[in-house]
Image (tube, rainbow, N blue to C red; front, side, top):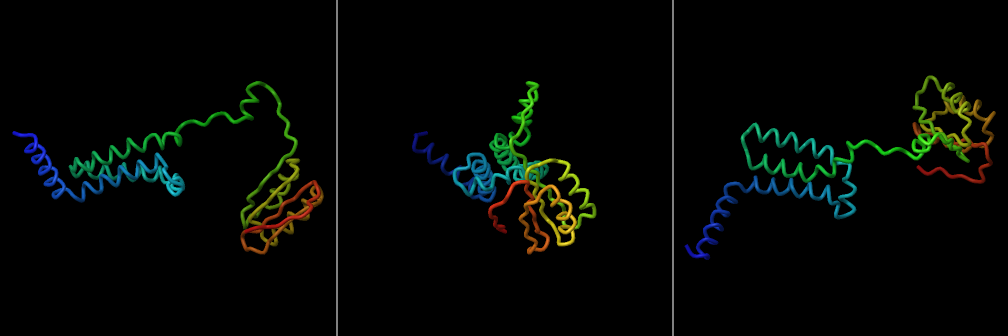
Length: 195
C-alpha cells in the first residue's frame, strides 16, 4: 500500500466515524473545551464562570455515569477526559485552608492588638431578639458597628440602645428589607448610602 492510499484509507475511516458519531464527537469536544476554558480562564468572562466549576464537575460525573450504564464508551471517555482536565481547577476548593495571619501570630504566643475595630451584623429583617443583638454590639467594644436588614421598628429599638455608647450614626431605611445603620464612636464628617 502506498502512502497516499494509507492516508486516503485513514481519512475515509475518519469520515465514516464522523458520519456515524457526529453528535457524540461534537458533545465530546464541547465537554473537553468547557473544561479547558474553566481551568485556563483565557478571558475575563470565563473567569466570571469560576463558580461553575463544582456544578460542572457534578454534571460531568452524572453524565459519565449515565453513559457508562448505557455502554457508550466514546462519551464516557470524553466525560472522563473532561473531568481529568477540570480536576486541577477543582482541587483548591477541597484543599485545607492556610492559617490566617491571626492564627500564625497565636502560634507564636504573641498578642496582636488592632488599632481600629469594625463589627457587622446582618440582623435579619424580622428578628424577634433585636435587643440582644444590640447588647452584643455594645459588649463588643468595636469602634464602628454596622447593621443591615433593619426595619423601622427594629431600628427604633437598636438606635435607643446604641446611641448611649455610639453617638454618631448614619442610617437609611428607605428600601424595605434593606435598611442599614452604621454607628461610630468617632465623628462622621459626611456619608452617603448607595444601593
